Image (tube, rainbow, N blue to C red; front, side, top):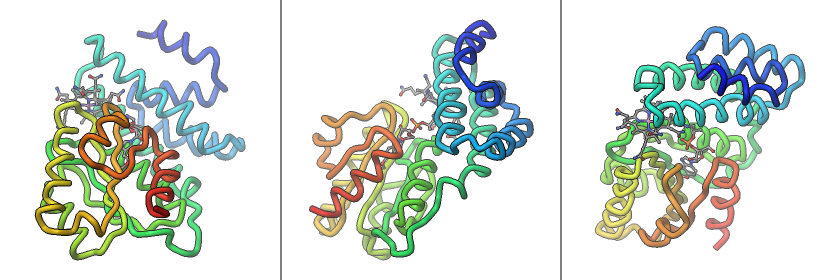
Length: 223
Ligand code: B1M
């Protein structure tokens, strides 16, 4: 594992390589200090997030698949990443004055992964959307209630597991059952999803990452 890490770090800015290592090893206190230092050094928040932290989470997933990491290691890595994101959040969310639209976002039923969902949320807020965060393990009735009570323009669903992505279609079915499908746009995303899957379940848009989620959100609202 250390060889693999060094191989990847070799191509990075030293402070980004340290951030990468801190996420990988779950050193959340050290990570917050280094994220602050990187910002002071003038390194772009997007680079700290993508090259340092998201890159490291990809490696965490690879190590988990290879049987070198277990759930506890994934958890401490996720905690470190969340700590880093708390520092970065204000730098990523330079909100516009007028809300671009109202969004309810959540991770679908049975799924507790929320780092990607939180990133999409931050980017939406940063792009001027008003966002209601429904959290994780969100049941179809809760998504539907947000559409009816909060009158959101977009319902945004995230799923990280091949089994839980199947829980997106029941949400769309429930919207139809309550007669509110036509009053909201449905945006879906998450690592195992594809454009084909999104079309198949009847979503209005699919985005493979947080920044494209903003482009697609604006696009589907303009239709
Ligand atoms: Co889990 N986990 N996990 N996990 N975990 C994965 C997803 C997995 C791929 C690991 C692996 O095997 N390689 C695998 C799923 C395999 C599959 O699909 N069949 C997996 C598994 C199996 C599990 C458990 C079942 C493990 C177990 O208990 N045996 C369990 C399930 C728990 C549950 O949810 N019911 C589990 C648990 C956990 C932890 C709790 C330990 C932790 C989550 C902590 C947390 O989220 N608070 C965790 C983690 C950290 C991961 C990995 C390592 C990292 C996920 C992550 O945060 N990535 C992950 C492996 C991997 O992805 N490399 C893995 C960083 C994040 C920024 O990326 O979430 O993809 P991502 O979000 C991206 C895009 O996908 C997209 O934009 C984001 C930013 O660009 N996006 C959207 C996401 N949502 C979007 C919504 C949109 C648009 C774009 O519009 C609405």
